[in-house]
Amino acid sequence: MQLTITDPVFTPKANYNAVEKFFLRFIRDERDLPFVWLMLRIFFIVIPISISLFFYFSWWLAVPLLILNIATGLGPFILMLHNTSHRKLFKQEYDWMNHIIPYVLGPFYGETPETYFGHHIMMHHAENNLIDDLSCTMNYQRDRFIDFMKYFWLFFFFGMSDLTYYFKRKNRWKFVRKVALGEIGFFVMCALLWQVNWAATLMVFLLPFFIARFGMMAGNWAQHAFIHAPTPENCYRNSITCINCGYNHTCFNDGYHIGHHLRPNMHWTDMPVEFQENIEKYKANNAIVFEGIDFFVIWFFLVTKNYNALAKHYVDIAGQFNSKEEIIAFLKERVAAIPVTRVHPNANVIFNGIH
Image 1 (cartoon, rainbow, N blue to C red):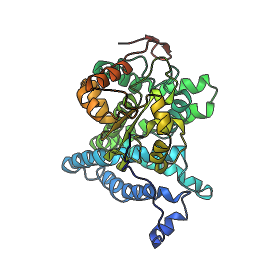
Image 2 (cartoon, rainbow, N blue to C red):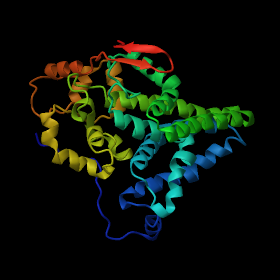
Image 3 (spheres, rainbow, N blue to C red):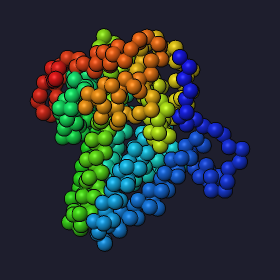
Image 4 (cartoon, rainbow, N blue to C red):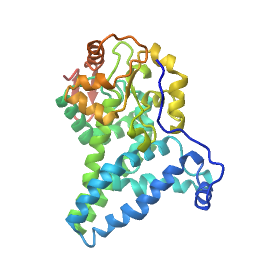
């Protein structure tokens, strides 16, 4: 099967303008200039308006700001945070500037300092969605909304305390401190700002916090929904890839989740090429690929059991299916709960195939 990929790749420029040359002095990789433009947009538009709400609050300004920022800014920001967690943005001599994204910008998008790095880099990639992964999806029937809500609420209420316990078990005390201070510090800040202006605190920090955590868990649910039960450790078979969708253009090729787990430090502009160069490995492993939709659409189709829509966007890279019905049967098989036992350290709940 011949695939034409339209997702973004890097095209070198013969000449950079003066502004681009200025910022290139600070960053490690010219391919990451889009992160600089996103940071500047947040610094000069989002943050000033957000701060102004604490002095002159207006629902007529706060509501559109929240909606617009969540709709157009949350995804790109989190994926900028994701990429710069894997690969530092600024050069070694400007290393202090690498704290700007997680510490200064992050709270405006519901990201508490250090918790994303700790959860995603130090825990999720290390555990690879297996049972010790605190965001493991294996126990759940992944086309049931009620199972997703169990998954989300457990993460929402216990996710960060579980993460600190995880690092404690691993004797990673530096990350215990960082995660605890980042999470607690965020809520202390919100408690203090609540005394200044509760409405602004709600709209600028607390609602984005809730929405971001819901979105991250919905995304992770879809990324790791279709698991091959006999080989759940196989990245080709426990993750999916989304190609040729608008999401990849705005969120830095995040759709290439299989390739990302195979090579976590691969640059986002290299992902479409990696996929094409290794397509035979994807075929050999029955990797699941969708075209034209992203993880959040897949999540919605799953929890509404819209398998017709999923089958429509499924890419049969190996040419193994003869009908839509065969594709649907294959997808349903891969979302079935995989009963495993894990003790939830804080809630004292034993999970044994919740479905």
